[in-house]
Length: 69
Image (cartoon, rainbow, N blue to C red; front, side):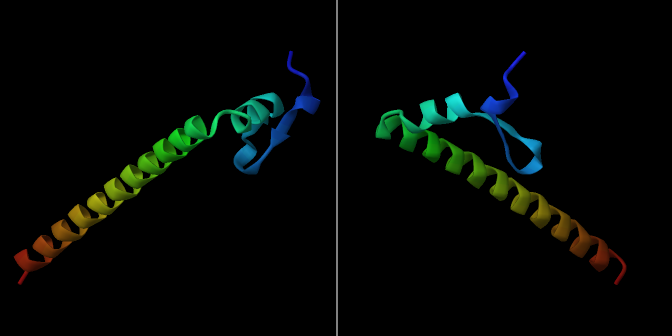
């Protein structure tokens, strides 16, 4: 069983191990920036996909509206 004093509780009840956090922060700057770039790329793709889905939904609504004219 894991020691509860070694856990940080953040928003949405995410548990972060203090040792893992300190290991992450003590890595080389190259690895840190690589991780940040990967997270940024993932976030960009998620936002782009949401915009694409919204665009498709709006286009379908417009076509449906034109069909009733």
